[in-house]
Image (cartoon, rainbow, N blue to C red; front, side, top):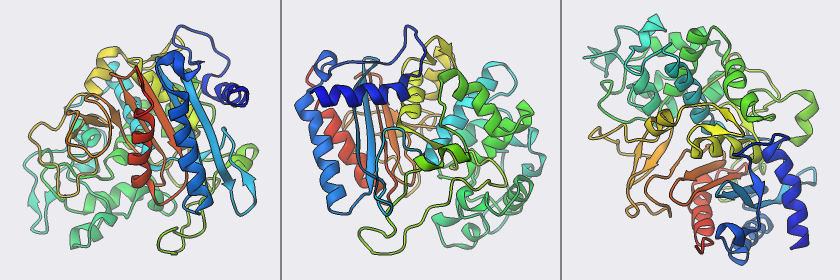
Length: 409
């Protein structure tokens, strides 16, 4: 327990920063917030076993309940090839965990009346007006809106989600395209491809958040990274969340294993120290477990942390409400049964149905490289897990099961 307290105090310095306020994330023994220390230790055991088996290089996990950090663990290697152990302040490529950040930034503009969710996207990006749908290129019945971008009902897609002619017209992902295309070239590529579906008729995971990031730039008059820092990172003291890692932080980058642990295929991630040609709002940020815990706790606190208000309570309520209703989810709905889509996050509607443990009202969205978080208002809990691996889906379910079985009151 003494060792645990020392490690907890170390990580807390990254989670809370130096600020003091009513919403500050202080430390607590697990039992003080209704969680079993013994059962939380199962997380450590499972992760260490998987490091030993060569399934993951390492991981950092933070569990906070009732506004206090009750568990934090750094396991395995930050860079196994170099023999560098994992550290609590390791920096990870968070991929699609960028999407909730950009959605919150856009919602902060919505709160100021500078954009409306019902606005056509072409109001801000004229090149996306007069879209066509399908290989037949029929004129779209209506324009995509800001709400469509936030809930992935715009009709846009990812080029790597299918093999039909329409998919081939789209960039594979913004993680890849931002290394070779400028934002103008990226928008031009989208403007010439037909939509996969009529806007507002079907959920399709897509490049929508990247377009939303461009809308934020147009409305704010600032680069996306600069606006995110102004509205989210600095107020929340998220000191290690950004698009490009500077030289003085490069030694903290978490690296994946060189090959897929199940197939043996080469597994390589983009170098986050290399500048991109545009700030991609759909998947190019890096962060730490501590930083993202602060972001998630802000949402759980209904928009505020340490006295810094990022969103109004009713805006967080809007963000985490059901925005799909009867809209079709599509054949590969990522969140799975029991979940709908809010604005920038998947939201659980039922206690059952989903194979993932959780309770109605929880919300989340993962990153493709095995970073993960969720917030559960009913349990007053925030959980953040960071690793760099192709096995993300497995660890989403594993982590939920290991964390939620530890709640004892």
